[in-house]
Image (cartoon, rainbow, N blue to C red):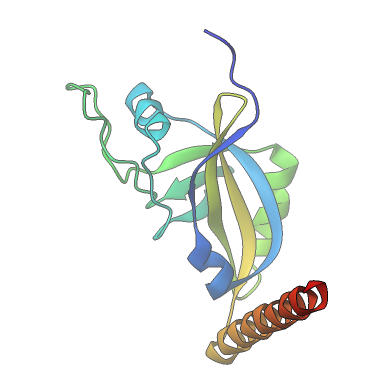
Length: 159
């Protein structure tokens, strides 16, 4: 069997970018059981309610839903167990200081395979207020309308 290369996305948390200001991102390895990896290879996972927490000098991923492997036996994993994330000590220390500031949290943005290994991209984020969310949506809509107008003008110009 050929060795996997590149990045294969499994799940991403689009809502996180809507609900939070992303300040910094980190790529972390994950400590998984065999049935979790097999379930992820089938492309099944959800980051919707997930969050990361630093506890006792270690980083943990909570509430990420990796469904049980269908061909698993008694060795199957529980779907929402907490999973250890692999980060360098300096990164953990830096995140510990940052998350103790008011309003800062760690949220998972994406779950993927990179060169055959399961990785999670977490973000140091600060929660948005309701008016910030509306502002972001308005900017996105304005950008989309401007792009449409430009492409329509180019089409008219060619014709």
